[in-house]
Amino acid sequence: MDVGIASWLVIVIAFAAANLPFFNDKVFALIPIASQRKPLIVRLAEMVVLYFVVGSIGFGLEGHIGNRFTQTWEFYAISGCLFLVLGFPGFIVRYLRKRHG
Image 1 (cartoon, helix red, strand yellow):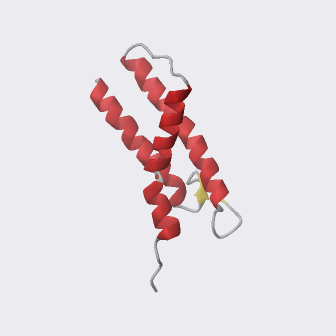
Image 2: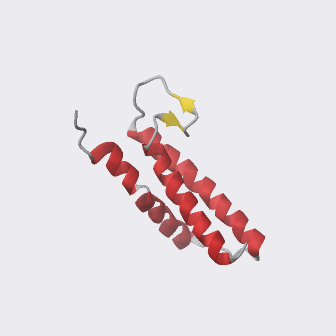
């Protein structure tokens, strides 16, 4: 797999993972919860866990392609903010869209 395909694969996986908590009412799309709707704090906790899952996939692909580079706190701050931005469409659909009917 070349670098371009691996990069786009991580971006697509990150977009899907960032929106996953907002498009279903099960924890990690597997575990049903007792209440009708998931609270926002549970959705945000899911996003944190999924951020680390996507990060580990990215590190795995980077190690498979070649040498892994060391990252500093700036990388994690920027990638965390990017993950939040990628999850914004799901947030809009879940909380800000008006329901008709």
